[in-house]
Structure formats: C-alpha cells, structure tokens
Image (tube, rainbow, N blue to C red; front, side, top):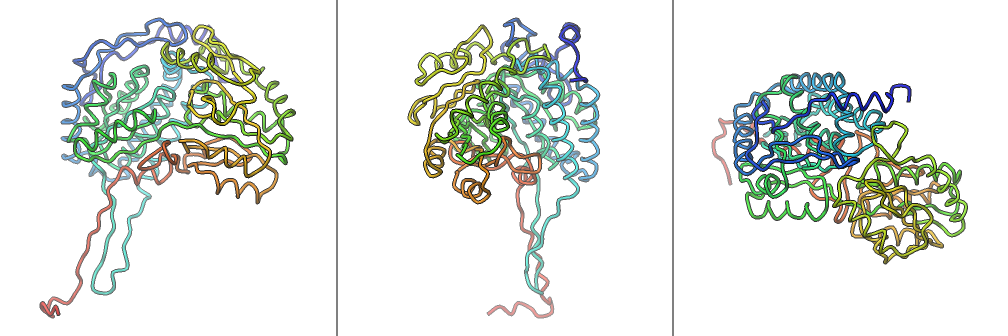
Length: 500
C-alpha cells in the first residue's frame, strides 16, 4: 500500500476535482439535448455533478459523425502501426492522469479507491496497450486455392460500433471494448451506464489529445430509453457490444432484429460456482480465493463465485477459514484505502440486495444486513440448489454454501443454472481437475484459484451468460471485424473461356 494516499489526501483531491458535465461528440464536449442527469456518490448519496445527458437527436448526430469519420478513413484506413502509436499515447495520458481517474472512479461508482488505484487503472492501461500492440501484428490468411487462383481471407473493420457499458467496472469495461474496436479501425460510440459516466468522458477527452480523429471515439451519457435503445435500433450502427444484465442483453437482440440485423455481442450475468472437493489442499489458501471470488468489488461482479459447492468432508474446516478471512475485508468509505469493500451502486440496487437477504433461506453465518449504502460480506450455509440464493444473480456480497457428497453431484449442481460464465475447481488431483473443467459448461474454468485468465485469454460465457463473441485476447479483435474473401483467378487468359 506504499503507493496509496491517505483518506485525507484522497478527499482533498476529490474536493478540488473538475468533472465533465456534457457529452463528448465529434471531438469535443457538447451539451446533450436530454434531461439533466444527476451523478450521485453511492457512498454518501450526494450529487457529484449534473450532466447534460443525451437523447435520440444526439444519437443521430453522433452516429452520423462516426459514419463520416469511418467513411473518410482517417482512422479506419490509417496504417495499423500509426493506430498503435496513437493508442499507446492514450495509455501514456491515462498513466499521467491515473490518480485523477482513480478518485473519479471511486466517487462515481462506490468502488474502493485502493482497487481503482491498484487494479482497475493498471488493467485499463494494460488492456488498451495490449490491443494497440496487436494492431500491426495480426496477419490475414490465404486459402489453398491451387495453382490457378489465390484466395485471400482478410479482416476489415465492422464500421460504427456502439459499446454499452455496465456500472460495476466503468473504466475496465471501457478498455475491454475500445481497445480491440479502435485497434481494428472502427468508429466507436460509448454509452456508459447512467450511474457512472465520468471516467468514460474523461478518457474520450484524453483520446482526442492523443490524436484519435474527431468522430472516432464519442461518449453519450444518458439512460437506456434515451440513448441505449436508439443506438440499438439505429440502422447506421453496424454492431453493439454490450456488457450488463441478461435481461437488457436480450433487448439488444430484439433491437437488432427490428432494425438492420446489426452484429450483437453480449457479455451478461453469471451465477458462478466454486467447487471444493474432498482432496483440496491448503484450505486456508482455498478460503482466500473463495472470499476474493465472492466479495471483491462488493460482489458486483458478473464472474463472482457466489455459489460455494463444497464436499461434506471438508466443509466445516473450510468455512472456519473463510470466516476468519472475511475479518480482513473492511467495509466503509471508498476513499479510505484501508477498506476492501465500498458502497453498492445506488438505492435501487441496495433495495434489490436487501430483498434477497430478507427472503433468504439457509443458515446465516456472517453479515446479512444493509447498513446505509453498505453491505458487509454475507454467508448463508445450508442453501438448497433450488433456492433463489442458489439460482438468481444477486450482484452483492452474498455467498451461498451448498453441500455435496461426490464429484458427480458437485458438477451436476454447478451446471444447474441458466448461466455459464465462470467456475472454479479446487482439487489436488490433476485428472479430476481436468474432468471437472471439461464437464462444467462455462466460458472460463479456473483450477485451484479464482480468476478470469488474463488479457490474452478470451472471456465470455455459455447459455444466458453470453452471445456472439468474446472479450479479451485475439478473439476480441475478430468480433470487431468482418471476414472478406478475395478470390483472384490466375488461369491462363490465352486459354479462353473453355468451360465445359
């Protein structure tokens, strides 16, 4: 924690901060035509600032500017090495302004400033830089067309991309979208969650400073009906990349069907299992992963392992370690770097989480209450696989413990969900680990740890957790491009049209 400031120092930075208050359209800040959007501090409930939000008229303007920029080719046809250099300049500017962005992110989202400083900002920079570096290193292909033809398979940018972001990781999800989309040559319109618009607007300003042309990266703050729906239905938007709830993701599929059949990539919810088998080693280390998986970012994490599926032989000692571990997870003021957990995003979400706590079945082992804007780590034991706690995504710091007596039962329970985003397996047997990893229907399965892989590995889900593509890795570039076949006839022209 040597690089972190004190609570008083962070508060001083917050008090002196200037916040963006308008949309970013066509290379500059421009007031939207929608209703004023109040940005609230989730921890205090106080208004941070008011933003001149956007509406359908602003969407039309931004889309026309994005299309104009794409057609002119100042970015799409720029040499990949030049796009790379500009994106790396953006990374340098984010690095230079990293503390401002960390404090802004914490104020806007309720996230602990320590996580913003130590995780979100570094990962945001790393993500954009990784995709920037890939821009001039991805090769297209030729197919085996024989001696009489050359078959070229080339990637081309999709065109105008709408990136619709969630509120739980505003900066990092911004990077997951714009990194590969911009590296591929697209024009991108970002619709941040209405609760967390500030850092996306600031990054757009830094992108313009880095040299990204006008119209190539725009940010439209506003609510779903005013901005998200018009983007989803717009006939001049070629693709929507959405991260958020499964319910909203389904809306974008309908918008696509009702408009121009635009590409849609969805990364949606999860009800992710952590399986701990009877041969798992070092239960204290397992407990560390379990606690991090369930409670990091206040459980407002689509890949949170909110179901602990544990073998009856190790359940008692494992829960002892888990309960000891959560004592270190202090909950409170997000600007205090001593706190691991901050505030839930808003009153509606707190009401939702409180409803789950009130109706929960099972034995309460820890937490269980909403205290103002905060919920401490909460654990329910003796949860049944059919209970709401075991089936529905709560998106709060709530862990449900389900007891099993065999490997087969553990896998069966793990797959008994509408979701399939991530899973974790803890076992000392390599063959058992691989059997579990192959049997669990999820996009990412970690063994003896919790995580999502890294920037080089694709991230996305099965079933209602995802659709249409993957974030991260080279696969993310693929989803922001179209594949084109160019067939070149090399036959002898002197032979004439001797076609049988």
